[in-house]
Length: 284
Length: 346
Image (cartoon, rainbow over all chains, first blue to last red):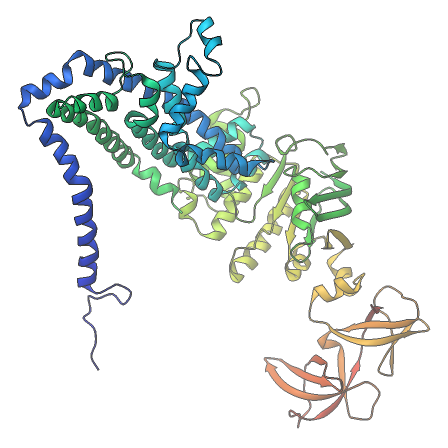
C-alpha cells in the first residue's frame, strides 16, 4: 500500500497547483497595481528631485492639496454620521419603505459620477432650480467649495453604510435587547453596545470613504469650474497639468495623491496592529 | 414579584402569535412555558419583558400595570437563548453592565459594582473568569454569565428563553438543577420557555402548556402529567399510544375493556384514548383487549419494549418489566389497558 508523504494534508491542493494559483494572483497584482504605482513615482521623479519638489510646492498645487483635504475633512465626518444613522436604522429597526432606503443608498454607486455632478448643477447652478434664490442671497454653490463638498458627500455616501449594514444585520438585535432589558437607554445602548461591535467595520468604511473623497474626479470635475488656485482639487489639478503636456509635474502631484492613499492604508494596518488584542477578544 | 398577563393578543403581519392569553405567576414561583415551536411561548416571554408590545391586553408586574412601559423601565432580567453577551466586553464588564449604565444619581460607586460582580461570579461558580471574553467561554459558562448579568440589576422578575436549548445533554441536566438551586436561594419569580417536556416537568412549580398562541393548561407538573386537560397536551407530553375508544356511561371502553377516565370527564360518544407504553398488561389471545401481533422486541436494561401491530395496521408500543418466556416476533397477543385518558374524538 502506498501512502502519501506525511507532510501533505489530505484537504490541501497539490503543491504545484497552490504555487500556480498564488503565482498568478501575485503576477496579476504586480502588473495591475504595483507596476502602475511605481510608474507614478518614477515618472514624477524623471526630471529630478528639484523639479519634483517644485511641482508639488508651487502655489496652485498647495492650494489644490489644501482644498482636497478640506473637502475630505467635511465630507467624511458627515458621511460617518449619516452612514451610521442609516445603517443603524436599517439593521436594527423595522419600518415601511426600508427596501427603498436600501436601494437609495446604492444609488451613488450605480449612477455615473458625471451624472451626479450634473444633478447639482441642475439644482444649484445659476440656471438651476434654486439658482435664482441662491444668487439673491449671494450664496455660491456651484463652482465653489460647497458644490465640491456636496458632490463628494453624494459620491462617498455608500462607503460607510455599505460596510456597516451587513455587519450589523449579521450581529442581530439581541445584544441591544439585552442592554435595554438591563436598563440602558437607547443612546447608551448605541454607544456601549452597537458602536463598539462595528468599530472595525466602521474604520474600514471611513478609510475607503476618505480615499474616495480625496480621489473623486468625475462629479467634482462637473461642479468645480476648474478655477486654478480656488476650486481645483488634486485630481483636477493633475488633469490640467497632464493636458498641458506637463507630464513630470502631473505625475509628481499624482504621487502626492497616491501617497495620501498609502498613508491611509498604513494607518489602518497600524490601528489593527495596535488593537490586535481587542480584535482577538471580539472574535467569532 | 407577582406577574399577570390578561387577554394578550399579538400578531405579526398575518400571523397570530398570541390569541388572547391570560396567565398569573405568584410571587417566588418558577413557571415553565411549554409548547412546540410557533406556539407563541417566546413571544409571550418577550412581551412580559417589554421587548415587544402586545396589540391588546395588559401586563402587570407586582400589581402595577406595565403594558406600555418599555423594557428598560421594567426591571426584568432576561436571559436569551443565544446568551447575547456583549462580545467586546470582558465577563466582568458584561455582568456589571446594568449597573454601569445607570444614570449618575442611582449608579453605585465603582468599588460597589466590582464587589457585586465578584459576588455574582461566585454565585455562578466562575470566580476566576472575570477577565475573559465571551468567545473564550464554553456554552454552559456563557449561559451562567448571561444569568449573572441579568441578576446583577436585582430584577423583580427573571425571564429565560430556552435557557438550555443550545447545550449538550449532560451540561443541560447539571445546569438545570443548578438553576433551580439559584431560584430557590434568591426566591425570584422566574418564567422560562422550553419545548422539552421533561425539562418543564423536572424544573417548574407549574407548567403552562401552549399551542397556536393559546394556553391549553396551567397546572403542577404532576397534574399536567396525570390529568392532561386536552388531547393535545396528552399527545405533546409524549410517548402515549392513541387508540379509538367509546365513552359509555362515564367510562371509557377500549376494545371491550372498561376503565374510568383519568382525563377530565367527557360526554358519551366516540373518543380518542391515550395509553402510555407502561400502562398495558399482556394477555393470551381471546381475552378482552386490543388484539395485536408482536413485531419486534427490544430489551433495554431492566425493561423490554414491544413493538406491536393492530389488525388495521396501527402500531402500539408497550413496555413491560418482565416479558414472559417464548415471546418472539409474530406471536399473537392481547394488550389490556390498565389506565386510560380519553378525549372527544375529532
